[in-house]
Image (cartoon, rainbow, N blue to C red):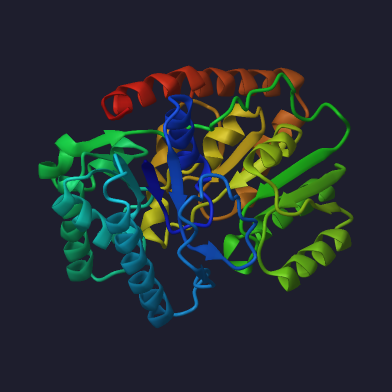
Length: 372
């Protein structure tokens, strides 16, 4: 049994890529997690059931979160102990689920992979002392692991040098080909796209600001969005965009592949990471490669490490304080087929160089060939 443990209802693209690798080798894969109220639950690979249903997401207090951690970690340790004779490898995602399970695997001499989606000590505005403690605490699980995975080099170098031999770079590749031959701005209207959690703290007003600027400049604008979240806020958004004379289309909660289908048909998408949260400065999500690979114009803020990396490649429009800063460059793309062709050609070259699915296959083989 190859056991995958995460605190999210479903694996998500980063974990799904590794699951797909093991299933392609005809391995017995099991996915274990709590479930979040309201999520669509995929029952695939859930041979051990789940870890209970919770509603701890989107900030419901520290006490409830700590209770969640305690319950889930105890259940994880129990599941591992009961199945210890069948388990060949455990894959833990982030600190929330590795605490007791990783320790038990070490005691039972079960190999485990530690996949760090977000460096925990950078996730919240901890004091320096607490942040330093958490970094040291997480480093223990890195050292006990067979391998630890992070999505970018700047995530690795955030940890002590003593952990480096265990840490490997596994980028957030889209787990399917997102490329397209479509060129933006050729169908008479401009389509904006957002996919993800829908709530006031996700800076969706930036889409409204872009839409207003484009409408004021005489362009026809549409806004497509998908995801799950605050239904009352969704209605507020709908009203705001309709008042701007912008077509508003809520597409529901879609799979990643379905969402990317709409992204590939869109012209502009925003990937914003609030720099007030330290972890956002080190963001390395699927969103940016998906936008770049889809020939959709990427708008992002310039505060992140990934933004600094892509700036010189000319595959993004970047702003500092306000998204309206990109409007002159955006309009120059809208009004010039030559400019937009050059932009999407640079984007395609960059995507195939850094996020080529062939590279992903090679990375997976190099990381896990000893484990299958």
